[in-house]
Amino acid sequence: MTTTTAPEAPSVLIENLAKAYPGGPTVLEGITTSIARGEFVCILGASGCGKSTLLNVLAQLEPPTTGAIEVPDDGAAFMFQEASLLPWLTARGNVELALRLRGVPARERRQAATELLHLVHLGEAGGKRPHQLSGGMRQRTALARALAQDRELLLMDEPFGALDAITRDLLHDELERVWKATGRTIVFVTHNVREAVRLGQRVLLLSSRPGRIVEQWQVTDSIRNDAAAAAALTRDITDRLRQEISHHA
Ligand SMILES: Nc1ncnc2c1ncn2[C@@H]1O[C@H](COP(=O)(O)OP(=O)(O)OP(=O)(O)O)[C@@H](O)[C@H]1O
Ligand SMILES: [Mg+2]
Image (cartoon, rainbow, N blue to C red; front, side, top):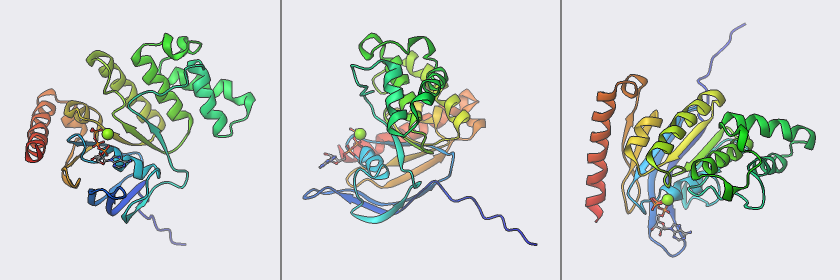
């Protein structure tokens, strides 16, 4: 008997993707990349270059104009810049609703929500409604809700953009822990180069008008764990991002 070990299929394949909204200019062009299962990819680029558009296409909320994408059969979980929680439900209620929409039976939802709230360190605050939570706690609730969808692919669009630096650092640690614990494939959009180097295994830089992948960097653990190397890479990427922005200013 012979066994062949095929390389594992990637989680996301993007083939020569272009996107224009009806009547508008080309937003994205010639985007080709593949994202491995369990990989953490960060996307950087100037405002308006098409980062959210790319996530919306991957979430199948928008069709590609030309080219093709392949994403997992069950689609993607999405986490937006604003937590967009339902204000009349508690943190637990918001997470349980996502479980209900996924078809988890009522008797299992409570336990599953408890586990997810613990995973994002919100065990104590499950009974609070969104207006009673801090911005960081709301984003944690949104992360628990996104995880409740139990999809392999998690798309995150500047989820921590509105938070102060210390809360953001805490959430970086938590997201890294959750990513390692759950094995999710994560595509994470940010304006913040330091955040991209902190979290991503790979950082993609998009140009503007149209958005193309102009450069990418691998962030190995040895770079991430070496403050000087991480700072140097952050400077390189920032310089390159500045060039892209000034190019189109
Ligand atoms: N639904 C839409 N219909 C028409 N045009 C759109 C739509 N959504 C986005 N656009 C346009 O597409 C371009 C890219 O927008 P997108 O939101 O993807 O940028 P972005 O890189 O996410 O920017 P930011 O960093 O500011 O969030 C912009 O010119 C925007 O005006
Ligand atoms: Mg955006």
